[in-house]
Length: 138
Image 1 (cartoon, one colour):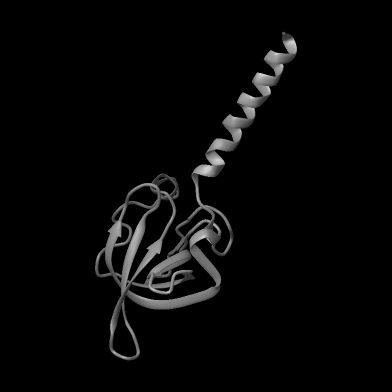
Image 2: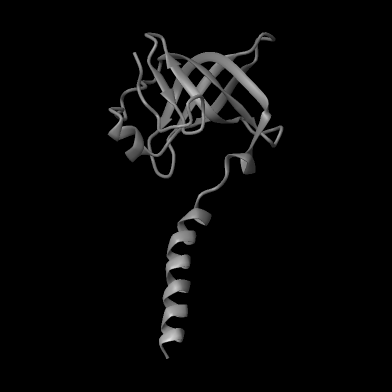
């Protein structure tokens, strides 16, 4: 009887520990680390919502076409703890983005991104650069 209880307890602990791990996707599931990208553009929209914020950045390409990239950031609560607020990036701000492109050619999503504002502050996504939570930097 004690062995059955121990086995159930171990199983419950393993389930409790591993279930949250499967709830979040791996960066490599959507993004291709062999497709780095860097661009400068204007913030069009900031989607401050769970599970990630997204910043839409409009860029004028060399051929004159306008492209809107959707840049994935960290979770809002992570950004909030680091001093970022929903109005930290404002519509119309000029930013420079470095990151990696999505695996799907037609997708304009950018992952592992660092967004640098005109005054030099950086919003670093987890895994990008230093591999830690996003931190505003002077």
